[in-house]
Image (cartoon, rainbow over all chains, first blue to last red):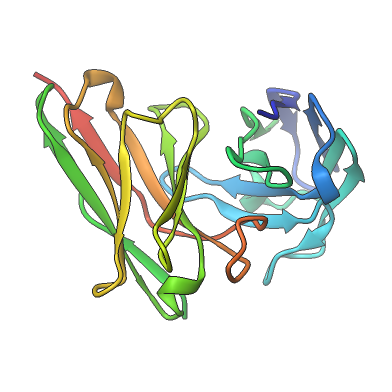
Length: 109
Length: 122
């Protein structure tokens, strides 16, 4: 089973700043099948990025994903007020289970 | 439009059984893997398992194998998550979610239900 470790646990930034979130796997994620999700309080998660770097439908271009192998990054270029939420990575490259990282909370500084 | 509509909140006592549902619409139900994700209060997302409605092929996380049962009813386009004997530690929000890729589990969860709160308390 692949274990995903996200860092930092909490990130405090101001609107307009750049956010960089990390997701590290304990073994290679096959075909870079790594997704990022955003979850706001009281809501279901929403898919942001799949295949490590492809934006899901309707996701603003300020969100970008990068990385390969075991190290992946979600970057939000200029934070908007609505971007403050919890972000999770998930791998789906090998056979199930398709574990999630523990999450990064992005909070307003 | 793809929609996953889950059944409502439940309050149960330890030892009771429960089956919650996820009603799918807007796509060919039998062609996409659908799964369940647990979120304990104030915690992260736990992948529980997935099922392929076409043939009911089911895969569980080792953490949930034997603890829950995932099933589908193709006649009503519904997926289910059930417990035979609930524990207080099962108190959580449970989401159903559909894989994005047709006939493939090697795709992310592109669509999510609204979540169902299950509370187990004596």
